[in-house]
Length: 143
Image 1: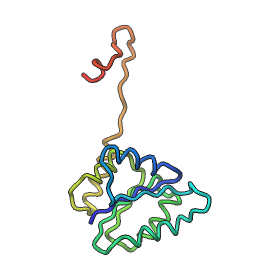
Image 2: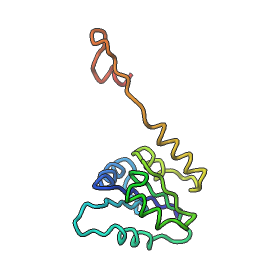
Image 3: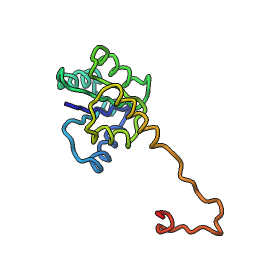
Image 4: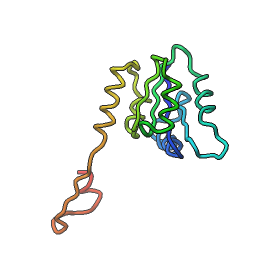
């Protein structure tokens, strides 16, 4: 079974949960870790409990906020010897939604494709510098 984990420092993962569920609905196979948000939370204990829910047949994609951050480090150490766990750092909303909704088999080829989805979802909105000739209304924006 495919499982997804979104893990971050602070409340980023919890905020992502709200937005992800708005677009993709609630999914019991998606877990969220918001590290260091409560005084007595133990990140290692949280990670151990999460990993206890994984079976040998599960394919797990873990999204962390920062490469080398403590959340990423601790999850990497825990997943070290499991070939069915893939860790992607520097996630964004489109890549997580893609992972949740995709029916593709989770393997290293798919993870590389998923990373390209994340990269291609970044861009800039070109703003018109000529204020005299531009309209600034919804009809113009969406055409």
